[in-house]
Length: 291
Image (cartoon, rainbow, N blue to C red; front, side, top):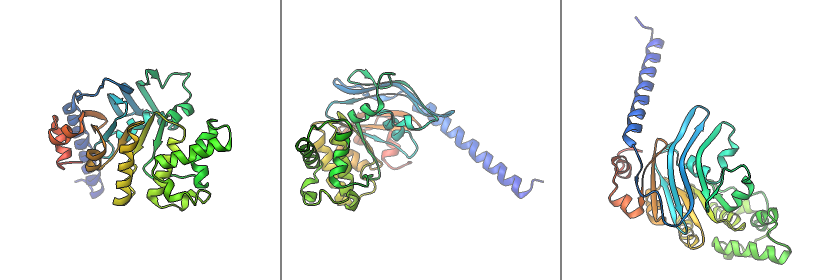
């Protein structure tokens, strides 16, 4: 007879094997992307993107456009690859030694993974706002001015002042902090800190803004302010947002992409995805059957 320990190990092995089989079955079920991954006026284009962490593949053959002046929401269960894909768009995955990206991603038809592409300059053009606000341990003013100084965008104090004030205004924060510009950015509330980080991103005049669950740590009032801000920013920027909130995706985006197990299952107009999804996996996720 098997010992209790051997029995537990066998049970764990069986469970793991079942999970792997189920994942493989779903991978086969996903098939080719359904919907409209491409647009007439693309700002960024991803073609046949695969991502590996060591030997493990996290993204499978994803092709997707980000259109000019639109918000694309990336949704799907935890671990489905949406944040990994987002980080490909400004080469943030370069900071992970075991990560390897293949395929092609372009910004205005320029290959962002080309050898002569400077990742630092790329990240000025394709800015990123993270899930947790990460203001620098500096004043509110210096937080916003940081990138402009780094990239030499201002030639004197007056020009730097204008960049800081304009960026804070665009982020909907200036009126709240106009008398506190030289106080620490870390002293602001969570929602204000997130808008400060958005102002810092805007200050270097990006063309695309990537947002990785920017409101997940915020209360409903702060979240509403961020969502309103996203809608305003769309007039001047292309935006991709990862969100676990389907209500948020429905409110802020024009197109929605559903990821599952590293594959782009379905992409289409947001109202169509949420009212008439074409793939069973998309429908199951949206109706709460899994995820």
